[in-house]
Image 1 (cartoon, rainbow over the protein chains, first blue to last red):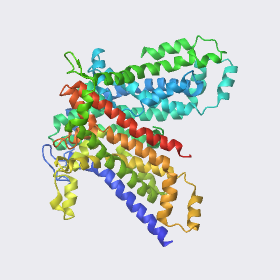
Image 2 (tube, rainbow over the protein chains, first blue to last red; image 1 turned 120 degrees about the vertical axis):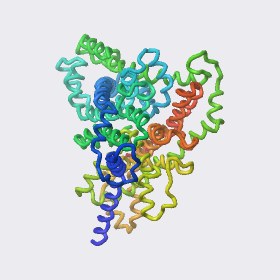
Image 3 (tube, rainbow over the protein chains, first blue to last red; image 1 turned 30 degrees about the vertical axis):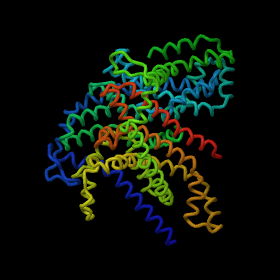
Image 4 (cartoon, rainbow over the protein chains, first blue to last red; image 1 turned 135 degrees about the vertical axis):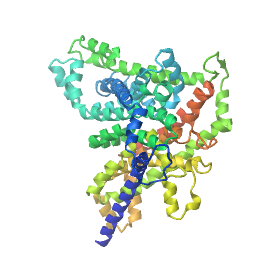
Length: 274
Length: 308
């Protein structure tokens, strides 16, 4: 009994310690953000006169309202289309088993672990030739392509477990393939689709490389890319930089806390399957 | 964006009863839009990266064929080769620390899995996965700065002599960057392993206890063995994160001081967009893509062969 008790307490202590380490950077950002702008506050020290106005100044300096709109537009461009195309392809490969579905699947899987840096150079010239540099399309269109391997992989894993009888009976009732897909299979796939949506939202929102290479104007980037520009501009004003960073990571944090159960599940499954 | 709409309208036409058609043309119509995006924005650029890697090109003027010379440069130019070495050194921090520490923490947590603390921890430990890596980079740059919290703690502990600007010191910059990566990935690994542990049959532990196995023996022969698959996933994800790291390094050190934290991803970015050496950048990109696949595939195969 005594060992069990001691084990439980070591476990708790370890857990609390780890949580402290996890939270420390956020805490440091927050405390530093409250110091007078332009100063170099020493470590973790509560300021004598907290400057809550720093958040307002950072909001204005970073054009937060424009950034939010821009990120939302990019997410709206990427996520629904990626889900639709990924689900359709996953359905055809996993359930319809189209001719050559093995080869198709392998082709998509090839891109599953592709580091974006590997193709960023030709992508730049391609986007330039398409006349899309410095527009939000420069982030949206490539991201849809880059997310395809995972989306197809993910949805195929769902559809491959769907029993054939399900489709047989629908076909008896005279449903064509599109109706079969839309009325029967999409509703059943909703859990897989919503997990995919969460992951794609997060990856789009936090996309950095494409944003800094393909879009010069920070207000047309994703949040993450804009933060890079913000650091370049305000990097010497530490409290302001910390306030800006907190503001920029606040939306994902808020959405995470609201949907945390789905997030944790989706991310765990996502890495298991990826 | 016109593509899926077009595809949708064509699907209404085919006669409903034909089963065989769905494996052919009709089925393919479902794949074509996805394949088109994938081909234009991934496969074509991959092919072009190969092509560029065989030329000398500044991105503007005419290009000259140089064959494999760019690859020779990747492996002989110390600046380029060191970036590959650095990426492999980062694996120690990005993979080894989160996986080993994650195993220990998960095993300890498992005993109190039902408590409220464990539930809160699940949420908190996930925070680094949710925020942009850029934000993690900024926060840690400040923590590791000469007046940052890390040095404050060290001074409190009486270790004032070792304090320094961790990211600016030639000998500590790379480990410091590695610690940022470890911070980001530790929570993910812990939770993945924890999820796997909940699936282990408790009877296995009882049997081991009856056989007189000690705690360590039990941990190795039951916990670690049963978690093969989860461990492989953690290793794959974190190794790729190390090899393809970009955001954290770009924000925290820009590859410096000197070249001590230069990684292939950042080197490609500089070569292509500052130094305008498209050929060299592409050769390094090809090497990076191969390295990632070479590291990811065996780990995946290893898991598939596992009997679960």
